[in-house]
Length: 312
Image (cartoon, rainbow, N blue to C red):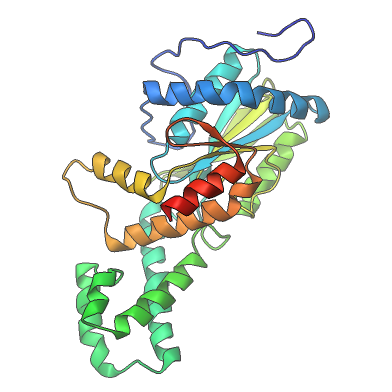
């Protein structure tokens, strides 16, 4: 679908039930009408940006990232965008950033919790509040996974200091090189942009033995699509077009409640993790070339700031 002046022309097309998606082992991608609708909104704005990158890169290659918070549809929308590009004759590959943490998901969850709790204890020590008498009630909170719950601080005032210090320590871990191997991803991006005909790409499952590399042929690939929460991170290098799929904290919470079949809300600790990730996404949003709202509308950065200020 190209006009006579070689500019990229977009027209909506049917999306089959099964299309290629990100390369995270075991990922379950369920593409619905809402994902297709949002991809249709993005494509007319994306193509002029993409054409400029393809024309200026010596290898006629481009890197696009699709980022956003939990449940915003990164994997699904990236899959549809990749399908559209391939149908237009622009080879694309979808890389999942979730293959590049330093630990498998179970171990990383434990490390996040350890970082929070060690940070909280050190906060109590540094403030001079810590006493031996705190050990039993604190461990009881650990057993109930309630030590991140702000309601518990209403009867244990010292817990507010613990939670504040733990949150700071957790923020210093989440989405940083301590948690994720950004160097490896950056090296892959650089080699792709330089025209590498093939790349060894990491695969990480949920068990320590589920770790390997697949050599992927990229001869016909012009666009590397990275779907990842950290796709607009300050630690990530070489992304030409970051796309932010936005959701406000209230929208994210509503989605996660709807997704939980047993009706349970997230634990206080998981809620804290999501809040920290949301703040980091907000901080990075100014770098996004395109911002799409949860309702499927393109937004300027000024409009984005206004919306998030209202929701905050």
